[in-house]
Length: 153
Ligand SMILES: [Zn+2]
Ligand SMILES: [Zn+2]
Image (cartoon, rainbow, N blue to C red; front, side, top):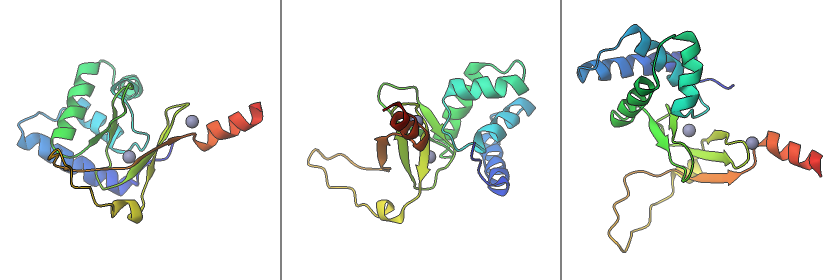
């Protein structure tokens, strides 16, 4: 699995701990370890994926804690949700503008950094919809699934 650079993770962890404390949310050892595990990931985990992975190292951490922590990070602007209709919500610790490549077969989500898409201007909506943020989502097959499919043919 691709991981974010360690220095970025440390900086993000400090930011998250400070923000949580400012909210009077306790940063327990368990919660800190959860944050560290999440902030280093680039695979956009669901609550369940993260709970499963972290649960092995942090015995007794419950799913509700994982969910609440992720939602708090989103509220604080330290994580985003990658919205996909009909699928479990995926969380992204990268809050810089970027875009996503979503594999329709295995559910992998890859980050895409591309200045050209960053420069897209949101259209003025006739309904009065106020755009706050945007990211482009491409659907298709990841390299692994595409290879597997071409082998099957
Ligand atoms: Zn795939
Ligand atoms: Zn992402």
